[in-house]
Structure formats: structure tokens, C-alpha cells
Length: 423
Image (tube, rainbow, N blue to C red; front, side, top):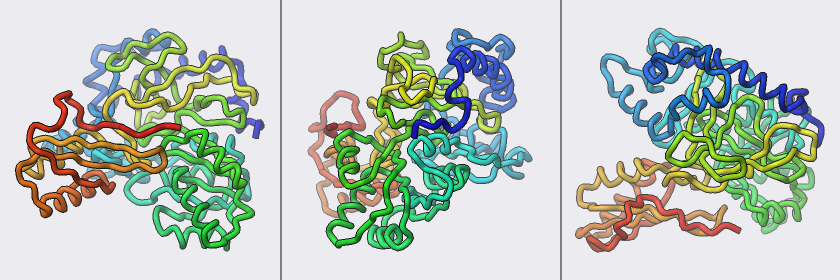
């Protein structure tokens, strides 16, 4: 698995940096052609944005801002745009645009367009590093509806030449049956579901001798779980991707941080600002993706990480990051899905009898639990049931409900509390 996917991975770092900076002006010009960035970058000469210093002078667009712009543009009767003016592709109803092959919905909701290029979100590079090869059968347990992960893993696997079984989420027994009867070579999905499947296999006496490799994402992947999977014959590797920009970084057989993808420019900035931090300091990952279809410039992910010094022992020469180190804001990732403070607010809005609410995420990683603590004088079972249904409607996730007395929640401004333990 030290074999590179292509020659881009092993090129001289100076040559890579020069190529990325040379591509920046064209990407800025592409961004200036879409309504959102046309306003944000008014007066910017794209030709001068040809260095990291120049890039750092552009504004950061954070997920919360993307969501608010999308909401406003979706509600507009004069300038309706489900992408908030950030996309250069769409369909007939969207400014007469074409070129969008799929549209995905992430929690918020936020909508993401997909163009027609093969391996559009660049997952093949990560899957190749995880050992996936032409001719493999890959069991894909990421969701195929609404959210993009299932489709993206599939297109990445197809780019390598793999066959894919679209397992989707849930139906553990049926998925396990398919893994065994089709003799899947590899798995793509969340690490927690892979653990559930392997535990179920052991419990029911189902043998999976062919399942040797996995590409996992969507949630934290602690070393303890990695080792647990390896003890059962599955070498699993993680990748870091977002619904908005696709692949950002991926793990290699060296198991030393994550190597950056070749199609993005990554900055690490001080949370709440757009200022790059010194190498090694923890900060927020800000991504510029080299994609004229959906030209996100300086997209703030809200995720924390830091540059890992040195080069990957596999021979890949791109910068490495330490991986996901938490959130720069209160947004939490639960069972592969982002949960935003705005969603908690939406739950409260739908129940006027609730004064304040706090969503607590606890448990060990890969065994997440959500509890909505709601302040209200209406302490009824009916309200608790209604709140549970609303949380599921808004976040697509289940939560326990704890009714609290008015004034009992901490007065610290926190809407989402991540109280999970990491091992």
C-alpha cells in the first residue's frame, strides 16, 4: 500500500506548491462568476491571488454562513438559489444553468451540487492508499439517500475499478449476509457500523474470511478501534472529507497522520479568524478546493487540526495533518452526521413551551448518544415524545429527552455539549 495512486503524490514539494499557487488565480476568477463570491470578492484582482499570503487576505466562508446564505436564497422570490449563489452548475430552473448530475442534502439543510466528472470528490486516492484495487468487491454501508457519502465512496471505488455492493445504512443482518455470500474484499462506511457487523458475525457464527480492508470516515476512529478491527483481520484506514469539498486528507499504511489530497489548498487558521497559525499549532482547517463547478474559496470547516512535521514514510511528499482534533465551534458530528446549533434552535422554535435547550452528546466514540435537555414548565410525557420526534425530523438522528426545570441549564451560551470520551 506504499504504491502511490499517481505521480502527483511523490512530486517535489516545491513543484507541488508552485502548481497549486499557479492554479489559484483561475479558481478566484471562477468564484467571481457566481453571485455569492462576486459580491464577497468585489474589487479583488484575481491575477494577484497567487500566493498563500494573498489567499489569506480573502474572507473565510464558514459553514454557518453558507447555511444562512442558502436559506436566504431559497426563500427569495426574485433570486431563488438553493446553493446560496455559490454554485456555477445547476439545472434549468436555476438561472438556466446545467451541468449538475446530482444534488445532495446535508443537515442544516445544506445542499451540495455534483458535476459530471468521474470521481468528482476525489475519493479514489484515499481508497487506493487503503489498499483497494481493481477487481475488489467493496461493501459500501454509507447512506445512499439525501447525504453524499454513499455515492462518493462508490464513485471513488469505480474510478479504481472496484465493484460495489450498495449496502446503505441499517439492516445489519441483511448486510452481513451480503458480505458473507458475496465474499466482499473491502468495506466502506463508518467504523462503528463495521464493528457492529463484526460483532454480529461473531455472535451468529458468520465467517468473513475475505474481508481484509476498510475505508472508514464520518466519525472519529480511535487507535483502540483500529486495533480491535485489526485483531479480527481487517486493516482499516480513515479519510477526512466534508460534504462541501470532498476529500481533504487520507491515512496511509505509515499510520502517521493524514496526507493532504492533491486537489485542495489547506490552511490552518486561528479559530474565529482567517489568520493562519504557525506550523504545528492547532487551528481550524480552511479549505480552498480547485473545482470551478463549486468554487469554494477559504471554506471554514469548523474542524480543528495541526500540521504534522516531516514527510510520510510511504514516499508521499504532501503535507500531513494530525487528523481531526475536535470542533472549532459547537457543531458536533454524531454517527457520521453533523448537528448544528441552528438545528437545536429549530427544535426549540417548533415548541414554544420550551424556554431553552442544550443538546448533550456523550458516550464513547463509535457509541454516541444524544440527549436534549429542555427547560420547560410543561413537564409532560407528550411533550417529551413530541420533542424526540422533532429532533429526529430536524437532525435525522434519535435523541433521549430530559425535561428540566426553568433556569436549571448552565448560563454559558452553550447549545451543543460534546461530552464524549476519546480513547
